[in-house]
Length: 136
Image (cartoon, rainbow, N blue to C red; front, side, top):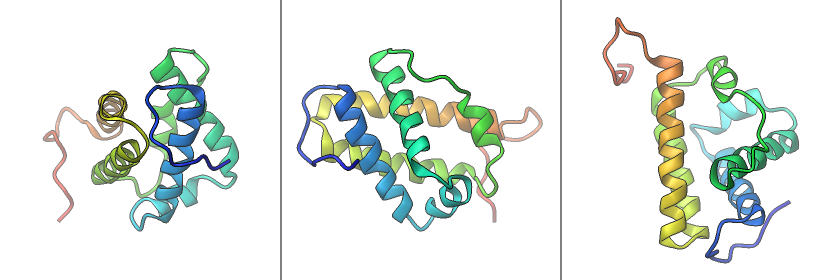
């Protein structure tokens, strides 16, 4: 379901749906991110449904999401720390299109924490420098 592109002034299940749908449309068109997602997701609606539940749990504390995002991301072939920056750029862009500044900032804070947590879980090793150095 694709939602309309009006600016929203509050967070609701509908606004989360709009964010997820709009964001993943951008992800699927992105030269860097699309190959990673397309290799991992064969049926998009169940993934989108999980993302609605995830962001509902994060932003509205509904507890709808049941899962372990770290485990899912750890097994993705081709994932690099740099891809999280692109993910955040697209997410931020989408939030700015859809929400007023305060709501966009609230989503951004959560997204940055989630991205950093996933990067640490996937890539951090005590015997290596942090943050990881880009591949040469």
